[in-house]
Each structure stands twice: as structure tokens, then as C-alpha cells.
Amino acid sequence: MLPDATLQVPASMMTLLSAFAPLFTAPSFRTFCGLACGFLAQPGKRTVCGMLMGAGLSRAWPHDRAHYFFSRARWNPDELGLAAARMVVSLLVPAGAPVDVAVDDTLFRRRGKKVWAASWFHDGSAQGPAKTGYGNNWVILAVVVRLPVMSRPVGVPVMAKLVIKGSNSKSRLWLARRMAERLAAALPGRQVRVTADSAYAGGELKGLPGQVSWTTRLRKDAALHGLPPERTGRPGRPRVKGERLPSLAKLAATTEFSQVTVTRYRKTETIEAAVITCLWYSVFGSRPVTVVLVRDRPGHGFGIALVTTDTSAATAQVIERYASRWSIEVAIEDSKQLFGAGQARNRTARAVEATVPFEIACQAIAVTWYATAGRTGDDLRERRRNSPWYKTKSEPSTSDMTAMLRRVLIAARFKQPRPDQPTCEELHAIRLAWEDAAA
Image 1 (cartoon, rainbow, N blue to C red):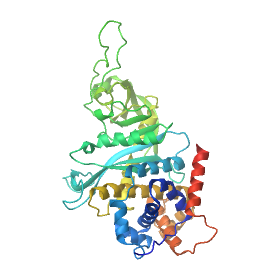
Image 2 (image 1 turned 180 degrees about the vertical axis):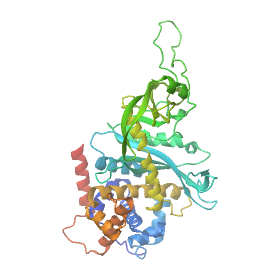
Image 3 (image 1 turned 30 degrees about the horizontal axis):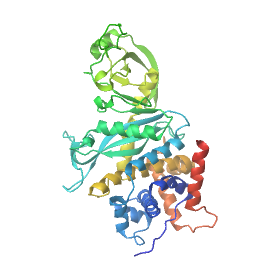
Image 4 (image 1 turned 90 degrees about the vertical axis):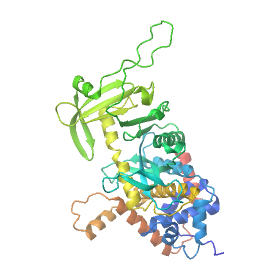
């Protein structure tokens, strides 16, 4: 057996990693820190053995130790995602503010019949007319934050659930609702505002907790009803919904539009919108919803129709909230192209269900590290100096974040440890003290 070599981790990174210590045993936590740093420092393939190479531990640890961590170690991927969400919310979301989250699904392409839960799924990013692919389909939940150095909303993926055909997990909406409910339970006192596209609207959303609101795009064939009438006092079951409303096209023709100024996709513009309070009984049951008809250009009809259970939100807030949903599309692309999520070749059920949530948590750690400790101002100037053709570059990109973190992690491996540096136990104690002070 090779000795249990330790990895030199920067104090700023160890402060974030220590938030995950309660989820693991002491040996598994050391493995988690090594694989997480190796995953983020590896410029090549992020396979399981690639993580060991990225951490510089390929000669010090047997590769079985890394494979054991994903296939048999006793840690819960759901708890890992919740810990990542608490970390992001506590450090990047203002205290007491509502937590905006976006939900979407993506396909990580795989090969082989023995890969757990792999099948044919819709793949919107596939080239050609056949938008299908073979692999593992994951539902991703991201916390949407505002960073001081970026003008656009940033989606930070924190939780991921595997779609498994032939079980309850075959429904993406079923998985999305349960992730939102678990997140709300992990953030008591916080409003969780979920935004998703039209695929995430169905009967599974009936009976949502009051702490969770849901905003999505309204289907054109949606059956809308008026609010239930007042009780007549006569015996019998009271009505649970009002009269059926006309189609969206007829509502747009008869409803008055007003001008609204919104900021979306980095542009501030004035558009027209109409607001209707009603019921979408087949989806949200008896919970009232607000329908917003958006018209980008003056004229007849409407462009898109949005629906939200957050009836207290202003019209501009609903439109901007749905526009910020695009941040999860960017985050998923970054996960695949920059962070290398899904490149691990695990096949067994336990390993497949644990690897992507681990990689998603690493991405959340990287973004949080840059926002809290890695941002110096020199990285952007250095990037513009090395790439003078980017004359209009004014904000750091995700590749800038990963490059800076990679340099810091690699440099820490070659620095001699100093006696005045805090230990892992001391960093964990400081972290707990911060949480107690903030409570």
C-alpha cells in the first residue's frame, strides 16, 4: 500500500472545501479534496484517473482509491448538492433575499450497453435534424446569482438528478420539483423562485409549498380558467375554478397592453405587456397564477406568454426572471466544454449517479472561489495583454476563472508548507463560527 500522501491546498480553497467535511468520513474527505482539486487543475481529460493526475497524486495513491470513492464510498450525492447550494447562497446571495434558481436538462453522451441508465434521449445541441443522442440524461438545478464583475446573471449549478427510464425518475418534472422542495427545506426562511422552460409544466406542480414559486413559459393550448366565484351559501361542493377563458390569441386581442421597461440579455428596452390573473388548474391546481403576455413590437398578437405562481411579482420582474433562465444554458455548456463534466467513464449504477453531482459541485466551488477569493483585477488586464485582439473585453469569462484557479492549485503543489498556515481542522472551525455568526 502506498503512503497516504497529502495534497497541498490553498487556504482560500480549503475554506470552501471544509464546508463539505460533515458529509464524509475522514479518509473519504481527504479523497474528496484530492479529486476535487485534481478535477479543477486538470487541463486534459477529467476521467477518474485524470483527476488523480491533475492533483499530482497518480504515483502516490492507487487508482482504486479514486474509483472506490465514486462506486462504493458512503456519501450521498443529494446531500453534496445541498451543501454546494448552501455554500453558494451563503456567500453569493444577499442575506434574506429570495433565491432564484433555474432548471433544465442535458444529455451527457455515453457509449456502451453496460452504462447505467443510458438510453436514447432528446439532445437539443445535436447537429443535424435528428435531435437525439445516446447517453445519460440529467436534470440540473442552478442558483442564479449576480457577481460584481459581471453584468449578466450567472448560473451556478449545484444539484443534478439522473433520469432513469422505467421508474419515477423517468419524469424530468418529477425530479425538478423534488430538487426544488429539498432546496427549500435546506434554506428555511428563504423564498425559492424556480424558472424553467415550457417542458417543466405539468400536473406534478400541484400542491407546491408556499415557499416555492414557479415561473415558466405558457403553452398556447393551455386551458386557463377564471378565479373561483364566491360561495353562494347553497348546499353542495363549491366551484374550484371559474369559467373557461378564451385562447391566448383572443385574450391578447381583448386585453389592454401597457408599456414596461425591462433589462434582459444585457439590454434595457421598453416593451408592451398584458397581465391576467387566473387559474391553470391542470398544472397548478387551485393556486392563482399571473399570466404575462409579452409583445416586443407594437401591433397585434403577442410574442411569448409567461406564467408564474408569484402573484406579488411586478410585470418587469417576471419578464426579467424568465430571461435570466438563459444563464443555466451557459452554465451547462461551461460544464461540458470548460470543466469537463461527464468525461468520467463510470458504468455502474452507484458510480454513474455520483460522478456528475460531484463534478457539478466542483464547478460551484470554482465559481464561488473566484467570486470570493480569486478576483484580483489583474487577471482581466493580463488576459487583454496576452490577447490584444480582444479589445472590447471588459468582464472575466468562465475560462478566465478556471485558468486562474488552475494556476493557484498547481502553484500550491510546489510551495513549501509554512508553520503559520492554518490546518484543515482550524479552517473547518472558522467556517462553523462564520455560520453561527450569520445565523
